[in-house]
Length: 109
Image (cartoon, rainbow, N blue to C red; front, side, top):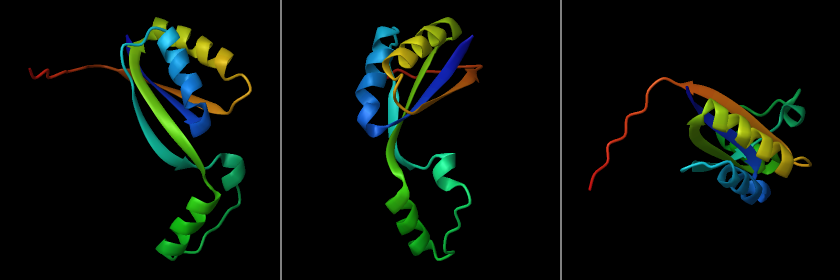
């Protein structure tokens, strides 16, 4: 079975994750930049309901982060997770696996 492997990591550690994915034998990946808050930073936090103020506060206290995704076999996913654990042993990261039931690719030449 294939899985969609998401790795969430702070921006400064993106190179470590990409190297771990490459060493794990991926064939491609995608990434998205975002602003993130960990549960410890968010716990008990209330914001003003004014949308502009809320966005400013979240932007001020959140961290720059990246979500990297790749589709791999379950076996390759285990290998990649070992590489990530090794390369990011002192870094904060989150890994999420989502089962993939179908993949359809339209290649245009």
